[in-house]
Length: 555
Ligand code: HAS
Ligand code: HEM
Ligand code: CU
Image (cartoon, rainbow, N blue to C red):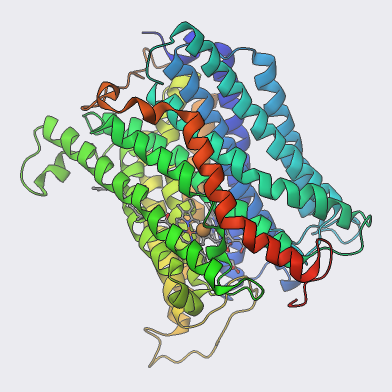
């Protein structure tokens, strides 16, 4: 079979463009990460502490929003096209959403970076969580709104492709990759509603001076209504690759198609009614609502635990196909020299640790210990910063040949790069978790407890700081190697033909899974009801306390 780029040349261009924007954001964001890691540990200081929040906002927005989501739209475009086996309905619509997203992201990024130049009357040092009372220049929010509307149009594009396919295949099961894309997008539509209301009705009018005040607790709550599901929006592309690509790379097949569908349905249902677990320490929200969010969060562990089972079972199946034996001996037969495989496997391994630190975060009483400490960046550099980012980099080694028709420039550099990311993150994240337990705060430019004493160096704050700086440096080098490898592949003219992009059928295929799983309208309905149940009373009480625009009495 011809390569993706030969079958769908127009779609391949959009995927390439999306990945290109993602990688530019990755490069700048990682550089900012290095600056922060070295600055706040007092190893090297190249910026003044006044600019720390500009850099931190740039790091959060460029990596957590721009890099991840541009990669997502590229991957989803590839997945929908190849799994429905048809081009998208109208490529002009596809370029339109790409253009809108890119313009929006550029406006937002420029507004943030303008903060580094005192002569430019623009800044947006509001961090990637951007809720009030911090206020940015209106262009920051307008760019974000354009970016989000672009993602909505992308979803519409994929739904239209699905509708066309459905009219020609009325009785078939939704192909698994398309099913994953559609459920993820429904979750995204439901959850972005919160942040859209916050940006359009409150933050934009307030930053333009059209209204005098906003209710900070309301904008926080609307942000976290979106801020938790967005983490699964980042995670689902990684899961899509773990479920559909990793088994093949391991030499086998996905263990169970029905179980994969159940997992995506559970994420659709449970991702949104949990956002208040980011607000356990917010005054002005009754404990009972926080307790409900905690309970929902604990249920939300289930789809990831199912994933751990299914994905590892698929890897084991692959290993046994390759001749692996024994309880653990099969691990040795996996293709560890393949950067795409090794990167994804290491990302999964680290996600097991990141998931456990998430469980700790989710417990209301333990959360009081770690909230706002550097433990939390420890948690999310393992999840979004590794499970997602490393899977995306590793997946690139598999995807790039298909969308360009070119051979990866260097697989050994790829392997070195993914392993270096894992090692760097072990240093940085582990030290961040430990530092958090000792009370080191997050989001600060200043190093804490600077006394250094040779006798007590090991186990001291000093040692933790050195590990963060060392880990951060390895991570940055890893990104440089990755970007070099990708750019060299793009620039190279060594073609790889034919590229093997065939994905084998699951061991237990869709025919065995209940038809109701494909009933997207039903799951959407239940998801909306759960959101209404979880959020109506908290929102009513927040508005009742201080009014829609009033300043909440607790702030
Ligand atoms: Fe989280 C804070 C709870 C998952 C991201 N989280 C954050 C923030 C971010 C973030 C960015 O309840 C900070 C926001 C801010 O700036 O303030 N999180 C959880 C829970 C989960 C969780 C319960 N988080 C994620 C994911 C993220 C992410 C995923 C991004 C992608 N998180 C919290 C809470 C807070 C929080 C509180 C607020 C903290 C505070 O006080 O501020 C769960 O979804 C985790 C479930 C995961 C598992 C692991 C399953 C293991 C698997 C591995 C399989 C292995 C393989 C490899 C494939 C149960 C699937 C095998 C390899 C071989 C070699 C065999
Ligand atoms: C925050 C370093 C990669 C997402 C931070 C902080 C450090 C850091 C030290 C904490 C700053 C503070 O709280 O004062 C790095 C380094 C990286 C890297 C050295 C690799 C070169 C990533 C990646 C992502 C990411 C790949 C996501 C895809 C974030 C986010 C924050 C953060 C969302 C929180 C920003 C905030 O608190 O507003 N990073 N990071 N980082 N990082 Fe990274
Ligand atoms: Cu959360």
